[in-house]
Length: 464
Ligand SMILES: [Zn+2]
Ligand SMILES: [Zn+2]
Image (cartoon, rainbow, N blue to C red; front, side, top):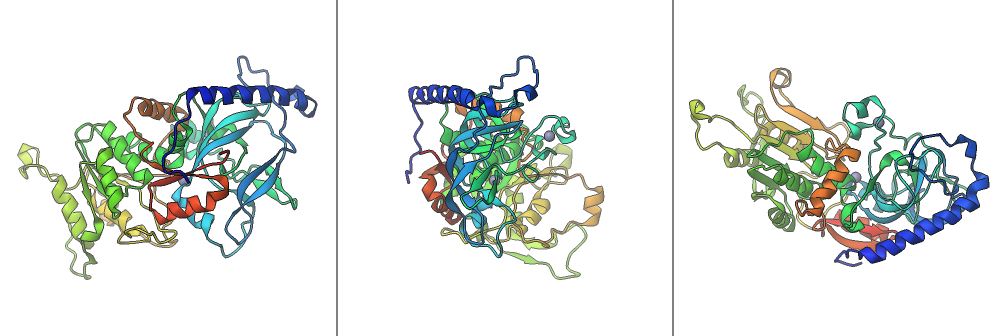
């Protein structure tokens, strides 16, 4: 494990890129007979390069295939098809939402053997005959969500809700030594990943793959929540619940958008300190504030269902300078509330939050948001069946806006390049989030440390 992710020199990367191109040309010759050349679409200017099917190629991957926690196993690649690309992952971040599956045994074996790790950065080594988005040698960001650009949701600028998500429908991409088929699951915890190009966005930058990998899933979600659907305006007030990699990205996004007040609510001390460095103007420890349900009949019509000292404190922090409504006063609550918490999969080894289910925070988001404000949520892992309570009258006739979704509204093909530009110009710091790197053999440890939350985020380097 290395605590300081290093940025590869441009010379080292250019050599690596030439090597990949050379390998690809060789593969193109070797695989020519295996491809149905006649099926290649006649796309004018299409950048795709046929490089062989990759069938039979052996590689290692961190795979969940039984009740036990996943393990690193040997796989044999199946043939690349139509719009699939083969990518050599350079860096894969360990999203917290996979921690439970990645380190703990499960009640039953999964229906399909799955490669772990959704999202990362790698170099395209081969492309299927219908690929148009990526070329051999491209460095690509592999996203949690596909973005086809053609389905109804994509056309309405919700690339994060693409209907051609594929992972549930896609055929297996590899085979285990005992013949078990293995599915891509967008998994980049592998020496090779083969998946539809809809998940990939080419990146044209000299930034290191380690810091770029933080955009996959967590960075996209955090930046997206503050910079896409939610109208964070210059001068507005924003409360961010959670200062893990997603919440810290949201803090950075709110800073770039010009929010005058950014309050990060986070139980872990070192994360609060980092939030201050990345743009938070105030940090709050939620464990310092009591909360209780009001008794039935003790809830006046305009009052919250809960007596919550944290909400009271945050409202106080966001209060206008004057209560005089004829002088611009009168607002109660922040302009925007962002949730980046979710439920606990494993107990942390650092300070624990007030509610490991993550449901309380969702209720607080609704209660805290000003009557005309915005709520953006992305956390997952809450217990199935748990509820958030909203007054019917507020739901029907209120003016709060809510944008849920695990990518926060990010349209990867539009937004990944602009996030990268902001990283290049120093406006967004993703390097600060990528705290520790691990080799593929230590993938489980990387997930365990992510679950322990002793560092902000861990990154696996599948190819060393
Ligand atoms: Zn994720
Ligand atoms: Zn789509």
